Length: 457
Image (cartoon, rainbow, N blue to C red; front, side, top):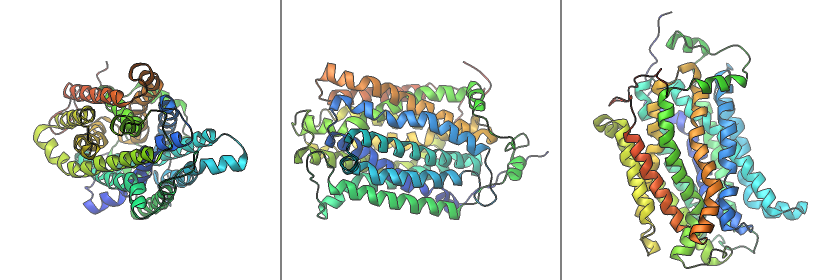
């Protein structure tokens, strides 16, 4: 069978199929900016925070490869291949968004421990976000010719940045509008609760927009695009994931090392920024998690997360021309170096009013992390295995978070006396190492072509 060339998509089509990421990242931004704050409001100790955050990577480790594998073997003339998982994941994520900040009220009603419900709703939200997020990564590989991969993931990065800015900043915006930023001990402020409600609505609306404006290719069209690529009509078996994992492309293994140190650094930042600001910049004790000053530190952390996503939007426009000029791995390394320097510099900035400056570098790194590894990877993935390999690639995202979650708390307690700013610097060093390993990637040409795909380690 002769191979048909996959047609280019217009910018409008790429935006339409990526719009759901606005809601996904708004939910993700709300979680990243407020999960530690919520858990500490509910009584969690600072050196236990990273253990609670393990819920996210563990669910991702399990869920994403399964959803990717199922998506590769799914086809409905009405719903398509990836879109059913968009919808299911969005509904469940919205439920988690509504109930997570209300865990205290649920625990009172059911007469059980509030942290138990908080962790359960956090797990529901994390698992559901993974259900809806993985198909969006696979959809770019499904729909775009490989030479449009960088622009496809760059558009996703821009939309992700917009959603994250809104989600991260929403509690602060509502506080400025007069919504209470204080709550009784053991409860979450209304500014956070209402932000999560808004996030749930936006998530559902943007996912529905993508579902109704995007038409996926049929199995027959996939067979035309690649003579050896078919959507199997056999019933999917989970044991196939293990076989696919054993055959992962060499480039994925090499990128895995870059991803490990990148996401180790990101996890450190997400978990410990609020408590780092509270102790290092506002002078609070690590045990103070219910005062007005602590909640101000929480709002500032959310605002900073909004800033780095805002800077990521701007840098995302530069990714494609930079990659064409200096190469994809060099572009990624440059961005990671900026991010590492940004995280380390937070220790040396004493005035919290200037903490937005390090977020410039963090934003550059975040934009590249969301786009460049995937833009390099799609050259090495068979079309009919796009979903499962995108899910397996997630292993290199969640494993460093699990490692960090296990060791982060004890390190902060033993070496930094529960003052987490020192560990935030460790995250900066990890991101610098990720940049070094990006430069050492082999088999990637200037335009992203991948060589030696069958080579093994």
